[in-house]
Length: 232
Image 1 (cartoon, one colour):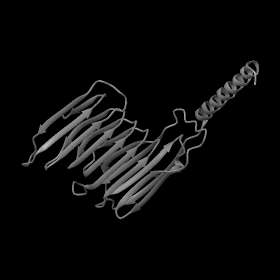
Image 2: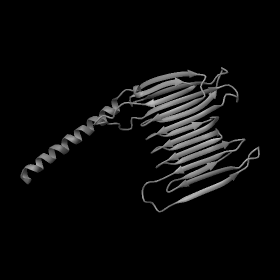
Image 3: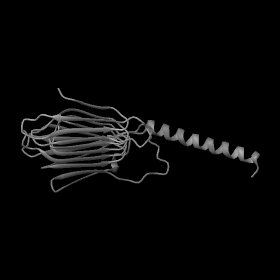
Image 4: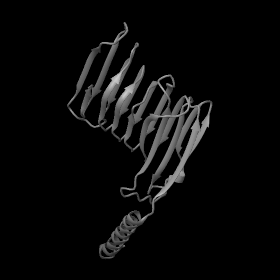
């Protein structure tokens, strides 16, 4: 093919690509929201594994002696790909489904709201595990023995957390923590590892005082990114 013939072919390809992007953008703006929900009772642990969803976990005052978990997934991103399962006193939330060849998702987020209803302080969760690829993770007012959060590209935010084992890891986003407490031996670890070749590097360590005799420690490491801890 001569150069004169290649130019129209390239222009045609560019026009088709632009039209496809425009179609996907318009479709995303006009798409209707979808919603799905799930409720489980007598729960001790929560496990969340998603790719393109924002996770919101919050404890509220319940009316029953047993811990009840209500999950609602809603947004323009297809909520039918969120699956729920409860077994062995655990709720498992997963995002499934294959990726389309042309998967247009212009600001079409999916939010997963997890409400943990407990009565009193005796109904403490055993474990919360959250894994997210591209969504923000927010955890608030939670009392759990262990909390593990891993996010590739989403900000991790925790507020008013009580836990004996807390681990948060974000590859390329900020980690914000406010109001953390424990009355026993505890080790908080926060990491923010950047794969790009940045020259900035920082580390912050602090000893904590607790109500009981214990060795409390906070360690945060960041190759690049904001780190903050505050307690009111």
